[in-house]
Length: 81
Image: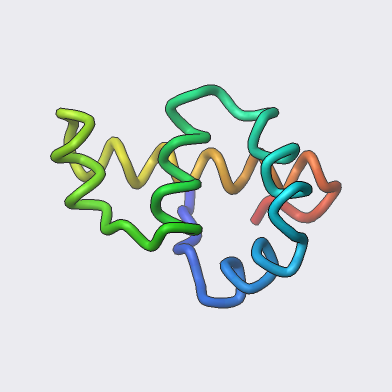
């Protein structure tokens, strides 16, 4: 499976939705994914810092963010590439 990196375009698209819409969208994710996506994409916290805070590997955090973004794309009916 090919992972797609979080891009500046992803961040801009999410921020353009508005805070209330983003909160509603994030609520469909499991807690760990929700926290990782919000912290990395919205708060711009590094993968390394998130891993340190959660006590997991950087790879685990990258997977959480990737899976969370994929789930959001699918929820919105977009191509999950």
